[in-house]
Amino acid sequence: MVFGAFSKTVGHLPSEAIIRALDLECQMLRDDLEHNRLDLDEDTSSILYFSQFIKMVKNGQAVRRARFLPLDHLEFYRETIVKLIQAKELPSSAMDQFQNAFPAS
Image 1 (cartoon, rainbow, N blue to C red):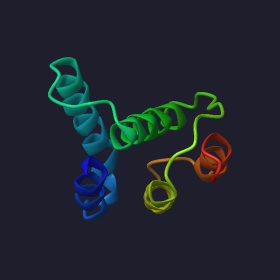
Image 2 (image 1 turned 120 degrees about the horizontal axis):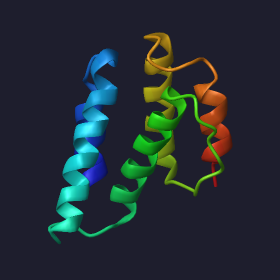
Image 3 (image 1 turned 90 degrees about the vertical axis):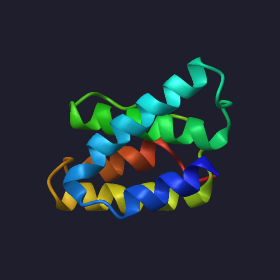
Image 4 (image 1 turned 135 degrees about the vertical axis):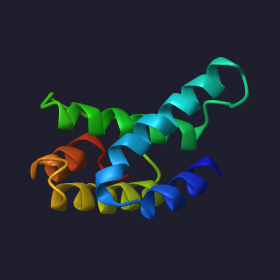
């Protein structure tokens, strides 16, 4: 449920606004988790992992293998990464790093 609203919102943003929107979304999710307004479910974990991945790639940090994410999430994240690479918001190596960090199950 959280992922559906998240992907719809992010999917319609201009590429230049995506990273900032991810940061804001994750701040809200962490606040909701901290105040017990939200459970740490698969959707929430997925969004938080993806945001962390984006930050690490953007900052040139090494990205290690993470956990498996739902296939529909992976597809959306791949599309988002392509948009960010095309907008020069992420380096071209981001897709390879993503595929290594989040292997398809």
